Length: 347
DNA sequence: CTCCAGGCGCCTT
DNA sequence: AAGGCGCATGGA
Image 1: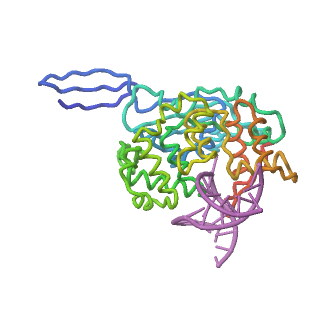
Image 2: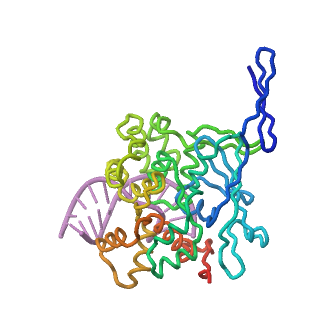
Image 3: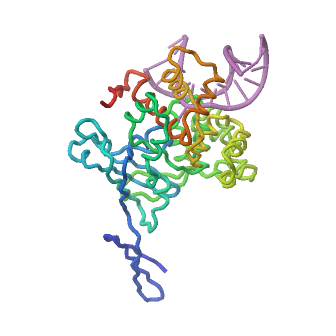
């Protein structure tokens, strides 16, 4: 039996050749779909250090989710008019609150929930922002990064990725993960003529490698951590599915048992993969944001800073953390001369 | 050359 | 509890 597919709009026709009989069925599978979104800044979201595999190419964001290659393109009414890309800013400086995200894949799909889940397009941002503390730093961060969202990522990919993140710049993390995928992931279907794309290597694939294999991907001292985590997942000693059933505190306790996973990486996984929005990863940037924005020239003790982070930001603390991270990293503190992204606050 | 990068683990006060 | 240091690697 063989099959051929002819893509039309909006339906896909599958032709089946079997025992000399040709049958055709119309299935509701498509190569593309459109999400209507409000308060969604796709570029900021995909480029805010929570995921490391999205690449901007010819105005669209390309990535791999699970086994699927995806290209995303955001349209907003204002952006189309003044060519400011997906991050439209209306006259007067207010970001447009609506628009669409067009998604294209390489093989037809009939169910787009996987993408809706990843992008969290059903989340109402105003409800989240309304729960943020009403103070000057949060207002500034929200004004500067309006539309920034949290993604929902695969737990294994998220855990392995952040195990690679220790003492690395984001560009370096991206490079390490790209190497891991090229060398040890599986090729996925891409549009004709497109450069190849790969899955993130599954835990059982990594578990079968050696530390030296991983070091060829420039993991350095992180290699044994990634290897050990993969082997614990394969052995069942770490059950990533079961973590979803635990309280945030218990799940965190399980994660920090892993070599190379401390409170920061554990909270990244809890926030970005398990949707625990009370998790509040504190890295050097967020600590800097907390000190400079909330304790200017006051030098809080680490215990005080920890207590503040734990109590100040409310039920969506993790969301607030992402705003602070993106705000101080992109809008307040360019780190080197080639990064001229500093701009005045949106007035 | 130096210093630092979405940390962690282990050591010492 | 708080601070120091090594760990690979690459870029400024």
